[in-house]
Length: 174
Image (cartoon, rainbow, N blue to C red; front, side, top):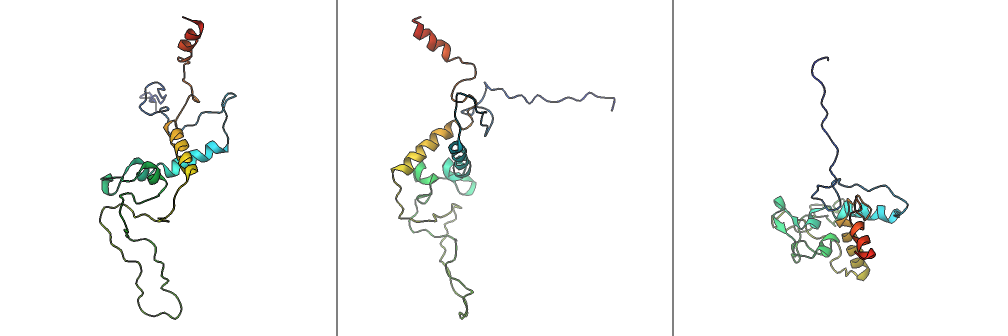
């Protein structure tokens, strides 16, 4: 073991050079301080963002090799309020509502007819007549704002207080 020295690569992130909005560390939530407030609401919104906003439907492309762009709005796509490609009366696979093991039935029982189109985009499953109200849209807008700063390291401010200096200069009259 007395040969070559062991070299360890530097793993220190550079907080100033990043292409990610909010910071370089994915999924990082800074420690709570006296000036900011975090409660279970923040935790639940971050869980919703991880689970439902981190899908093909939220990014806008789905199907075989992400070849198909969504036709519905981002609000409808993220909340699964319509078919991703805007197909009407489209059925492909899905659950079989007919129980084949019911006592007294004999022979083959057919299930739902399947007419797949080969796109690889799943069909809409759910209540097609559901109409969202304004609170659903307000929740969507709140989540989209939080999603933009998901990796925010500065708790809403910058790291070096650079924005404060020009602001103070303006207030002093310089």
